[in-house]
Amino acid sequence: MRASRALRSALLSVALVVSIGVPAREAAAASATENGWSYLIDKLQRDGVDRAWAREVFRDPRVPQFTILEFGLYPGETSNLYRGFRTATSVARARQCRARYAAELESAQKRFNVDASVVAAIFHVETSCGHNRGSHVALWRLARLAMANEPENLRMNLARHLRGAPASRRAQIDARTRERGKYLEDTFYPEVLATFRLAQREKLDPLGILGSGSGAFGIPQFLPSSYLRYGVDGNGNGRISLHEPADAAHSAANYLSGHGWRDDMSSTEKRTVIWTYNRSGAYIDTVLALSDSIRRGRN
Image 1: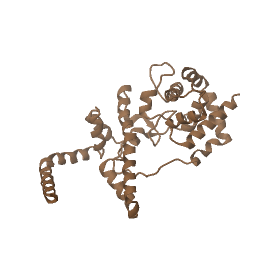
Image 2: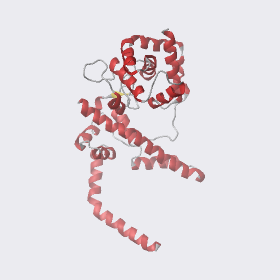
Image 3: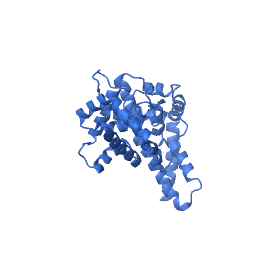
Image 4: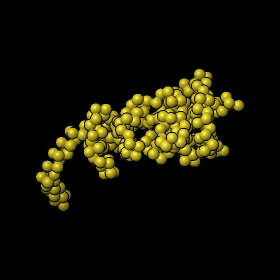
């Protein structure tokens, strides 16, 4: 029985080689003309994005060729990353941010019932109140992360993480690598798709959206899907720009409100809401501590 199955498997393999030989060559040619991004372009096409448009975007000189994304298995932020935000100088700047955009922040607070000091703290931590918004092509940064689970990229990461690993840990490392690759794809591919939808809706160049190395943009550092869902025209000019203080304040407050924020919540409940903004305990500690300091400075 085992030999019969092996023979059928071998014959099927030969048949597949014969039947898909031409499409395989076409796929290889497509990959060459799509700058290594064919895996992502295929997914975008399946989700309704015009392939010619996606191909044009990923062949643009602003998008480097995709080769490999090396990813770690246990990433995380440490409290040291946010230590500088607790200094007296940083607190003073956070209070200045609250004062500078008082009208916009208080308008957002009235509309969404979200403490203006919390939004100001987020502005300060994310972009130094709008001074450091990032100059990276957001789509490229998101697309790189979305390619984590591309078969060849996953294979190379498996080889890298398994190299020299003891036999007793190989199964665990293999599973963790696959889990991490899938997580990155599941997290960041929707953001790539959202970027195309955002660009189409707002009639923007998808490569003209500039932001951080993680693909977030604007004063509050939203990802594209958050912009689409929570972006608000705060100044009534008929468009939404997270680079404009009123829109940024109203959008950030709308985001927190949309995730359940109430000013009378317990500290634990507030932490749960801010966790959706950035899944880092150190980040949450910093935002809440800063918001308390900002609030005390206004009393």
